[in-house]
Length: 444
View 1 (cartoon, rainbow, N blue to C red):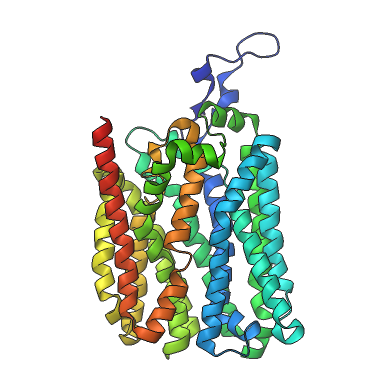
View 2 (view 1 turned 120 degrees about the vertical axis):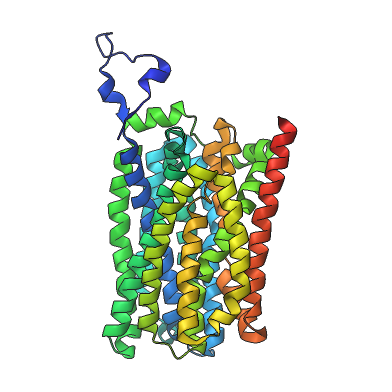
């Protein structure tokens, strides 16, 4: 893959003798950036999906044994949402750390915190041992996960997109999104194996803890892989050349607040669908269906592969028809899909499987281009912090409470509320895209 040279942008760099340094010393391969992006995102998503699946299969029995199963699951989903609430605060704090001590220090602290919180969950005693203190500790560790995820932003997705060849921005934009299905596939497959291989007692006693240990190991690998990239002088210089440096949240909101708002809401259709085909359906199957949990997790693994394929396809589609057109068309398709969601979820094993597989395809096509479609509007100085906070707010508004709201409303008032949730996300995406286009036309 063709390298990216920052030497040509500043003029030829000089070696220690005052001569021109060989250009090959300053070549940065987009493929290397892509690998770093996928590894980093896979580790983050694996952590989050391990918690999400455990919130359905484990936490109601281990941390809320005195509650009815539905109530225990809703309380677990409330804990699940805490990380998304904490994430923007983690981003703001980490930007201050980076401005003072550097990108490598920030990333090391963030991934150390993420791994420590994830591993800490594996050692937590249950409610039967220490009562509500177990719940408080789980909530604290979940907040730590969110803070760490906000702090793990390294700018590599923006760097990759900004250095994409002409006519290939959609293709390069989808690369970072592949971490989501890869992380989900690994988490679901591991839980399917443990849930299907162990007795219920062993699974709830010690089996569920293994995925959290695996998450810690993956975080260690991701830490070294990403530090190898962002701590090198070549990448540091290239990031500075592209002005991918942090600014304060106050300055960002003051000068580019409208882009943060538009960027977050433009992605809501994808983010609303995200947890409604991953975490929420598993809770519905567990509580209200006779379908095998292990079999359903394997169906979701198949859905994860379809999602990955759809993400790749979204790159080609976006480069052919335009990224915003693609995102808008997929929002409309998600709106149509929302009308069939209650029928499919209430349609037995076949209907539920169709909901999962079709939902994952739509998720891949839309999520593949959800990142950066509007954040490209940021002035270079604000893109680094703007992209991070835009993503945080999109997750918070669109996905953080999706499992909690969808399960609570559906259990008490019917599955039609799943349609309402998805439809509202699609409407927000279309409205944000229309408003963004109107603002661009006004400024021309």
